[in-house]
Picture 1: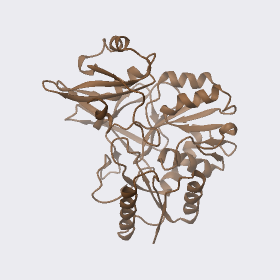
Picture 2 (picture 1 turned 45 degrees about the vertical axis):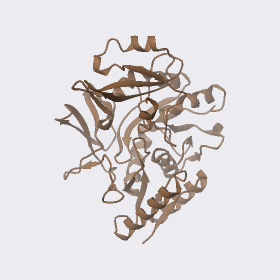
Picture 3 (picture 1 turned 90 degrees about the vertical axis):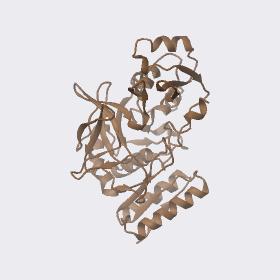
Length: 371
């Protein structure tokens, strides 16, 4: 048994290679060709070892996480786990064979690869990131891409778009409203490369469980926070390599989590963020995504990242890195009414935030910005 390793820079060639593997039922792995040569070699060796050990077999696929919190890691799942979600995703997104779907990100990101996979499964046309999207009627993107996509629409470059699928990070209410003002329906989903779909919403408010998904909140005693678990046909098998380090946890009853925090609210779930982005300040646990969500909608804030930095008495305090024209005074005023541990003590300004090739925030380089 072999595994086709796909590391094409040209998006149509990558898509064709994956489509052939899906049709034939052979195993395949998609690598990011922009990785350093040494890491590409190491990833290829891990794939070969997994094939030899029968960890990867026919009908399997290997995708890699975005690397938003560290070095990318291989995730093994069955093609069937994606095929099972095609019909329910069509129902919630409204994407059909009549659509042309624009994917403005690279297909080595699983978010965009799934967008291509779904479109192909439904018989829709696919438009890649370097193509002219003038014929597109729907698109997939991460929230950080939305301002540029909306600017392109305002300039007349997306005259036919009626639907935007957004995932990979929290979508600010202001961005959703701008999309709706442009006449687009926004479908936002929450998931992870290891879990695939977990929850979704098509308006502001709580997330609802994705069709076919059971969700459960379990209290983590040490964090004093609830962690979201999911059970569905869409879950990954596990990581590539027995010694792989990643957030995926599985239990014997078929439930899985990547340790994202959530609350039950009327009508569904509020997704808070990853445990590994929680900061302990003066004995209080602060989820930085909560603070980012508050600041992201403020005038003059184009991008925002919040992280914990060492404090000799409190353990950690928050620092905010801001991209945009917002001044420190209004930013400090905006957080004056929230609990002290959740208020950034320091405000830094940057031209851009570090992001993965798929557009997701990379948190691992953030400490270098605050030295």
